[in-house]
Length: 172
Image (cartoon, rainbow, N blue to C red; front, side, top):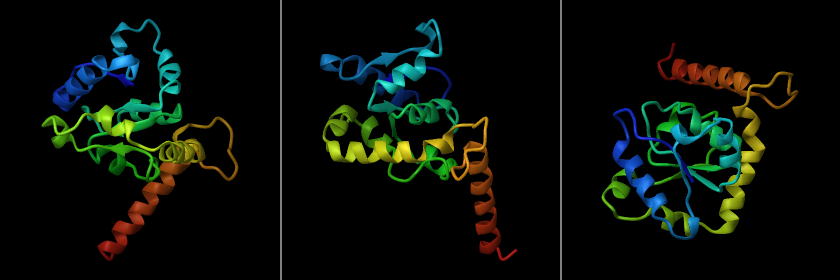
């Protein structure tokens, strides 16, 4: 599934290719949604919940809201660079996103849908289980979640850990 539109100056070639591949997919194996054509933006959650994989090609920012929205809805993000994984690694558990080579995809070396079709159902279930287990890290809780940190606590703990790592690296 691909929710996206052509805008900005980054990642356009990949977004164009994903759009075309999804649009041309047989048997509705991939759906394309343009946010500008949707009457109500709340429909994104429903769309993401109905998909197994959600294409999240690079955009103008590595903090793309759609990347996190997809995971909150239980959809496995398909990315084409390390950007999303490296920006805030404490939010994205290892082994969740499917990362494809943007360069090879752009060169036509493979079709993304073919790669996704070859992922065994056990591997899909494993990734979905990780999303379920760590999804609380992506939401902003109204009440205290007890032992489970929400997005705010996850951010602070992750940033503090990074600060300690950098201090140790530079012997501050």
